[in-house]
Length: 231
Ligand SMILES: Nc1ncnc2c1ncn2[C@@H]1O[C@H](COP(=O)(O)OP(=O)(O)OP(=O)(O)O)[C@@H](O)[C@H]1O
Image 1 (cartoon, rainbow, N blue to C red):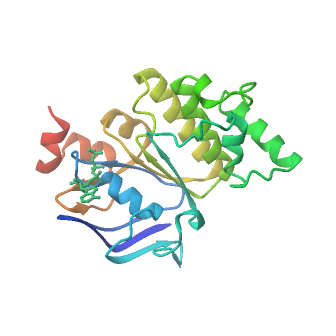
Image 2 (cartoon, helix red, strand yellow):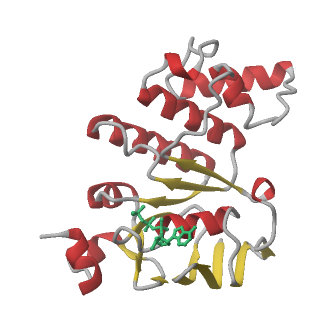
Image 3 (cartoon, helix red, strand yellow):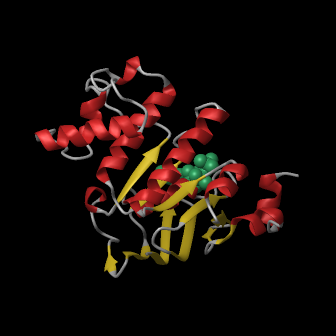
């Protein structure tokens, strides 16, 4: 279970407060107007942004000041964070060993992750020799190998076409289900939220609200979300 206990994040004039919990294995969308603080929220959970007050707990353990790499999570961004000079297999291997000290068993796991994400046979290529969709799959394969209990998605597939994006999101949901992963996903597309996430955290007016059932929220949004979601 992820707990945000009066978590307060300040960036210049901007301030965001979150008081909420996410059950283990749940899938949650984060929805709100541009600039509302969705990426800031994920950045604080991931440890890239230091909160000015409050606590982050994973189960009973406080991780508010745990370095990003030691937190029980993976995060996928739009910019897939692939190293251009490393092969696809090495980029995935970074999920196991940042120094790329990989055993034979590790290579077997990398092959399995390539296979699972539809990249079989592409391990020796450099990221530049892959399509955008394939690059997304590499980042996902790396997260898959890390098998952390919490997966944060900050619109990693938004540069892909609609069909490819929903294919990637389905793959994420499938893998999350298999691994029992807790999923927290920023989305600008209400249809993605409805398709994948039974509950949604609305972010508006400086608050990340506790999760609410996605369909009910989107069918009858509060005024601050209504304008953003449109008719
Ligand atoms: N380094 C910074 N210093 C000051 N303010 C910042 C900084 N980074 C972001 N902000 C402000 O914090 C607020 C939240 O930004 P954030 O990127 O989290 O919004 P968002 O909801 O993810 O938006 P979008 O949907 O457009 O990606 C914005 O008002 C932004 O201008």
